[in-house]
Length: 116
Image 1 (cartoon, rainbow, N blue to C red):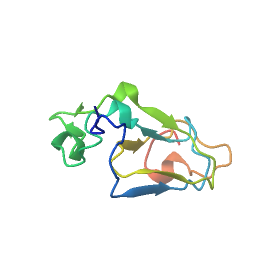
Image 2 (image 1 turned 180 degrees about the vertical axis):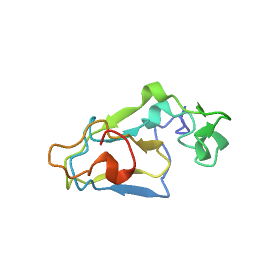
Image 3 (image 1 turned 135 degrees about the horizontal axis):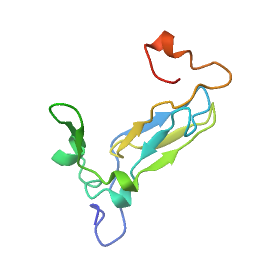
């Protein structure tokens, strides 16, 4: 039930995360991704081991994920917008896939590789 009980409540978050992109964050320039709380079986239990460590590195590369990555949703946002979510929401930033036409993200040589 996601920790919400029968009354439909999800509990009270004890931490708020706020993010404000300084450039447009799109699918191509690297936006955030989030797992909706309804898809996160541990959302209501932030101390659950799978929630405290939602991914583990495997020897030789790769990772074991402890959350439904297929349920993740992108969160594109315009520069200067404010995004906020409960701190126990599983989220991560995506890699930039293309260079912004304004050149604001810098070249791959400046950052040591990649396409951005």
